[in-house]
Image (cartoon, rainbow, N blue to C red; front, side, top):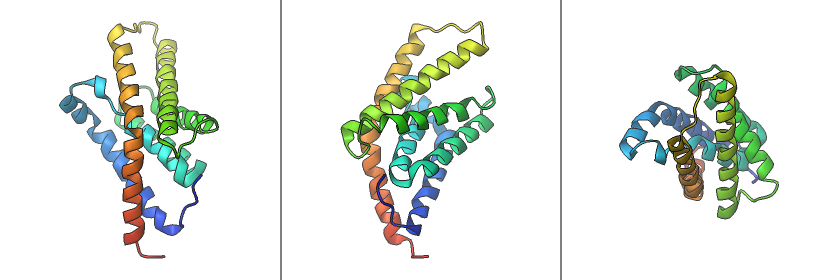
Length: 176
C-alpha cells in the first residue's frame, strides 16, 4: 500500500463514491451509446483496485461492499448477488497483488484481468446454481471476454487519471 497523506485524501474517497454511484446509474445509457455489452467497462473493479492501492483493505472492501449494495438496490436480480460479486473482485485483487504490483501498469492489467475473470466465472456459477433454465450462449462468452479485455487494458489509463485527480483534490482541499 502506498502511504496516504492524511485527511486530505478523504476528498478523493468521497469523489470515488460519487463516481461509482453515477456509473451505476448511467451504465445502461453508456452501453447503448458505445454499441452494446462488448465494450462493457467495469469501472468499479478498476476503482476497487485503485482504492486498495492507496486506501488499504478497509477502504477498498467498504467501497466494494457499498457499491455492490447500490447495484443490488437498483437492480431487480438476486438480492446480494452484486455485493457478493464485488467482494469477490476485492478478494481477487487482494490475492493477485501478492504476485503482481499494482503500482506498475503491467501489474494493473493482470490484476484487473484476474479479478474480473473471477467475477464473471462466479456470476455464471451462481446463475447456474439458482436457475436450472440458464443457457450460456457464445455471444455471452464473447461479450464477457471483450468486457474483460477492454477493462483490463484501460486500467492503467484510469490509474493515471485517478492519480491526477487525487493530486488536484489534495492540493485544493484545506487541511483539517
